Length: 242
Image 1 (cartoon, helix red, strand yellow):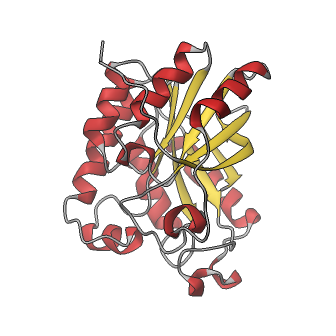
Image 2 (cartoon, rainbow, N blue to C red):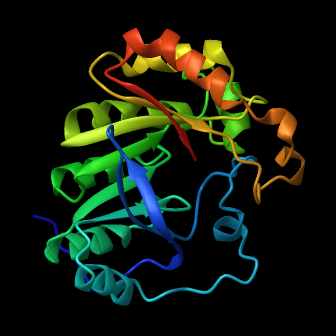
């Protein structure tokens, strides 16, 4: 077992409802500050750039959820695995008898492996941003200069498939970066043993102002059509709001 401390990561936000699985399981979510990527369509702008954010008491929050009888907590960001102290938080949640659903962008495969090896998450959600065969496109969507980003993502996908009791892969369908051919390619990489979620793009507090444009929204009917065509390629597929 790993050595954990009482040092917690900064939590910069909460949500009463986060969703995983099929059928959908809902739970409270917490958002850890900090991210190594700058995806221009990211709707967690305040968590990424600040805008008057304040750090919340991590232990008080999880103790409150435990007292309220919550069975799960969803840990997101930002990118939770960009902060090594996230492992301490996950451990504290598990020690209180609650289950952990963790979200990641996939660029910290070694941290993700630690989470798996220590049994710190019961369900993991991973974003696959765009084509997993096009490094330049992937870097552009992620707003990063890290030329190893896609290699890390593919490594994390491998960890996801073997390391956790439950998992799902997700793609936010902003039409500037994603079309049907892209999600079909991603589904093929995910494979028939694992689930895939197409996320409806919400133009709300985007990191890059010009992405807050309805023209980049792929409507639900179109996404459901994509899902119907992709369904044979994955374990299950769902359309959900981000």
